[in-house]
Length: 192
Image 1 (cartoon, rainbow, N blue to C red):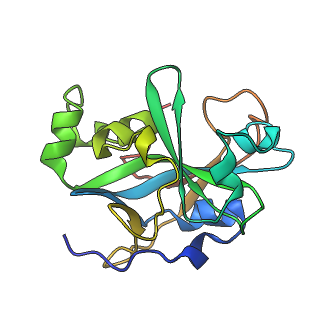
Image 2 (image 1 turned 135 degrees about the horizontal axis):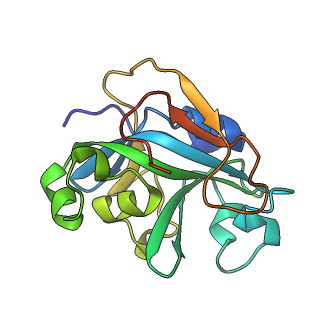
Image 3 (image 1 turned 180 degrees about the vertical axis):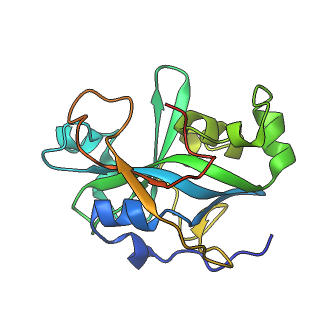
């Protein structure tokens, strides 16, 4: 699998919404598995009550207040891990939830981890599905995404696409905010 360079830390040191949009089309890599990011949600800090950082600095949220370009992984519904990328300059909270991937490498491994997925489109088309497919767990909390086995890379050949914008999914606080971004028409986005 030929991919471009790993995204540098400065890529992540930007406004949360801009980062959520900019991550679309980039490639999330964990070991031998990889997928193109096709859907994200922005969780800026401050008044966004859906953001975990809105409650302030805690053991759970400490990474969100740290340097950009780190993984924020948390457990949800007692069964799934969700993978977020810390953005904004250090000390200013913000993160981007990666909601769906278009699988491009390690497909056999993804299928082994997600035997219920009958179609390739179902391997990583949701936040819990993609963490299982790529093997992302709570052990990846705080991982530096600028080096190591869990990184985000430029695609070798960037594609042009339109970005669709909708409200975020599966939350109650600040639910109407248009902070979900997806590659318009992509068949690998989550099914809501």
